[in-house]
Length: 123
Ligand SMILES: [Zn+2]
Image (tube, rainbow, N blue to C red; front, side, top):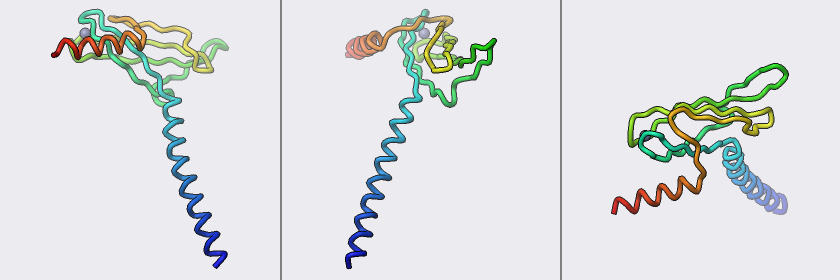
């Protein structure tokens, strides 16, 4: 009887552990996600660009200065102007350079403001 009881305890602990691993896994995913906010030069639309460090970054092997680069083409929904984004990172994933053709980088606050203004204007 005692053994049975212990086994249940272990099973419960195991599933709790699994569940926390699952949640932990999602959190780890977020750690890899890079979010950028860009504003289209043509129509002013602010677009949220999501990239994943693991899949979207290219390894750059320069002269002793290894790092990563991210190239993304960004297309909004309000016009057909394509923006070309380039972000460079050092080995520790710190951004060392960022530029965008056809748009500019904006803050998250600006993105949120733009979105709420957008919604307000629809009413
Ligand atoms: Zn646009």
